[in-house]
Image 1 (cartoon, rainbow, N blue to C red):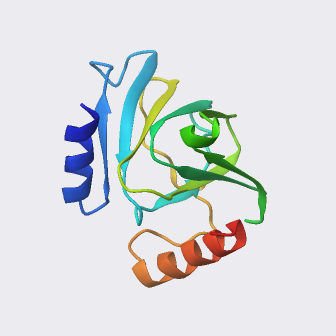
Image 2: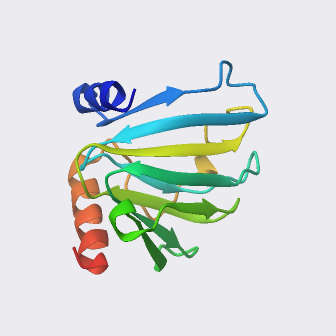
Image 3: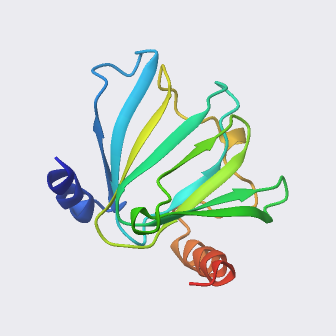
Length: 150
């Protein structure tokens, strides 16, 4: 399952692919794996409406999770890396967060309260570039990773 979902992620323009364990997005708990490749962009966001905590467990690969303040400054970095014994993170509702994929074949297990609801515009960080602005995204991610020490 991990290999199949990773292969689909590599073919996806967004360089990521979900495999849902929940049968319906209206279920009270959404559970999925998210296969991601370096270069994918998950715009920094928060979960206010609806109010949802989010949990991640790394199954393979490596990611760095960034926590931001309301102005876009990084306040915390956590590298999920099973090789170093760091396996998961829990992000509370309302906290600005994002991540960068550091290794090919990275797969996370994610869980959050359902039902699934697309993020409203106010949940996307206004200080981060929109995904369609690929040049700005590349500059932004380079700055984040440079500050990370990669």
